[in-house]
Length: 124
Image (cartoon, rainbow, N blue to C red; front, side, top):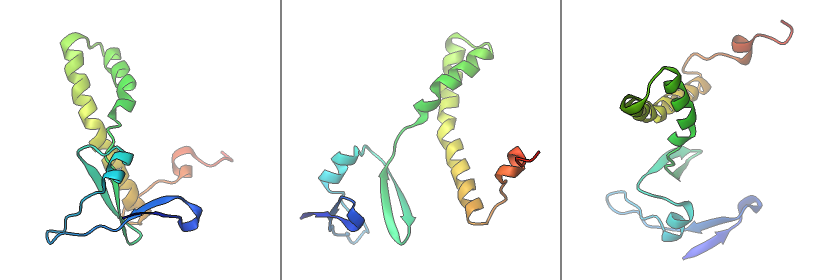
């Protein structure tokens, strides 16, 4: 049964679902279609809760910058296309590495730079 819950005044859909013996769950169709889930989801453990989010392919956000850079390097034709595909495939892993580094730095488990380290203080 689907319930409309309102914790803290925010509208939220809630549904109790069972977990199989293999630790599997079935995402309710209302959630699946509402979120536009395709073939993959990202799963996080956050504040003692499991968060499931649809995977979004955001690599297209950098297409213009990638193409401009490759054209500036003098590439064209099939070589441009091949290098574009290769560079585009590397965007997501690079962003994920940056996010991992940021999480480690936030947890105090990795080195980090402050705003002042990067840009200097305002008095300079």
